[in-house]
Amino acid sequence: MQRRTLGRTGRTVSVIGLGTWQLGADWGDVDEADALAVLDAAHEAGVTFFDTADVYGDGRSESLIGTWLRANPDSGVTVATKMGRRLPQEHENYSAEHFRAWIDRSRANLGVDTVDLVQLHCPPTSVYGDDRVFDALDALVADGSIGAYGVSVEKVEEALTAIARPNVASVQIILNAFRLKPLDEVLPAAREAGVGIIARVPLASGLLTGRYTKDTVFAANDHRSFNRHGEAFDVGETFSGVDYETGVAAAAEFSELARAAAPDATPAQVALAWVAAQDGVSSVIPGARNPDQARANAAAGSLELPPGFDASVRDLYERDIRAQVHGRW
Image (cartoon, rainbow, N blue to C red; front, side, top):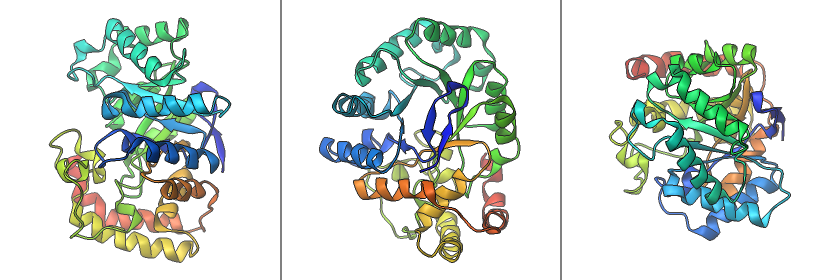
């Protein structure tokens, strides 16, 4: 497993982390024993970075990680959570008072005095320009409630505004073979500023595994059923904003490229390794609903792809994806 510095946190984390939205909600049911087994398997495979949020299962994901941390006190795992969606996502709700309440709740859920990294959870664009918001975050660092802070963004311009702030440690952004826009400006700006990049939705909500067909049916409580057009939250969080049938067809092409590039790896592992290979990425955070998925994802952290594969990915994107999604972003 490769390891990299997570931006201005100064922490060293595994290049493949674990996103734990799946363990909280919106991906079908995962019971507690299975969730803890996923955390065990990921860590045993070399993962040292867990990403969660206070609204994943209304704190269930955080609490499961807290249970795991108590059972593994010397794990060396860095935990990042997110805050800002417990109230309507309106600018005035991003206040010092609310931050304090949300952080104290996350600290209790996780069972820690100091949360390693806290990220604003895709707030309104205007929040990124408000000095008072970042002064409040600085105060939480100063009193030891959080170790560092970053942002989770939907838009390139939000990422660039955040990167320009001196104490933003990391930016979390959607990045995968069907979502290349951050490569042009966000990653270069982050590298120059020393800001970490956490790549989320790296498998385009599972499309890039190549396992789905146009007839695949997802559970009713899975966001891949109820958020395909942004009905519940930003459409980019589901299949990276790509129309499902378009995505299935493009994923089949990606799978062919992946098998030719790395015959002993799965398309999912190749997709993760490709994101990890982008200059400036600190950690990639696929989710997993069972231990086998967690172990398979972690194995991508030591996979090297042949020269020319990157150009093939970009060609596929330009030919099959870019025009279809350009207006939606």
